[in-house]
Image (cartoon, rainbow, N blue to C red; front, side, top):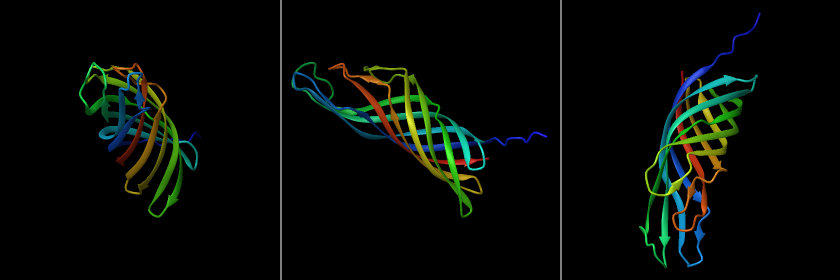
Length: 182
C-alpha cells in the first residue's frame, strides 16, 4: 500500500535588508553608491517531506525591497542626491532543506532558487520585470509549528539600469522571517 505524503501549509511575515551592486563611477566623475535599506515580505508556503531528514519548502511572497542610494554628481543631469529605490515583487523561492531534530523542534538549512517577478514600478529608472537568485536558508521550527528563518539571496540578473551610466545592478537580500506551519 502506498504511503501518503503529508504536505504542511504555513504563513510567513518578515523583514528584509536589500542592496544593489556594484556601485559605479562614470567617465565624468559622477558616482552612485548603494547601501542596505529595509523592506518587508508576507506570504504563504508549503513543506513537502523529501525523505527522513530532507524537505522541500515552496514559498510565495509579496515582497517590498528597498535600497538606499547616494549620487555624487559633477555634471548634468543632476538628480536627487540621495534617497530610496523601492522594488515590489512576487517572489517564489524553492528550497531543498536538511532538518536536524533538536529539543522540542528541529533546525533546518539548505538552499535553492528564488525567481521574482516585479509587479509595479515606483520610479523612473529602467528596471527588469524578472529577477533570479540563489538562496541560502537556516532556521528553527518548534513542535507547535512556530518558526524563524534567516536567509540570504544573491541575484544573478541585473534588475536596474542606471539612469546616468547604463550600468546594471543586481540585488543581494538578507531576510529574517517568522512563520507558522499549520
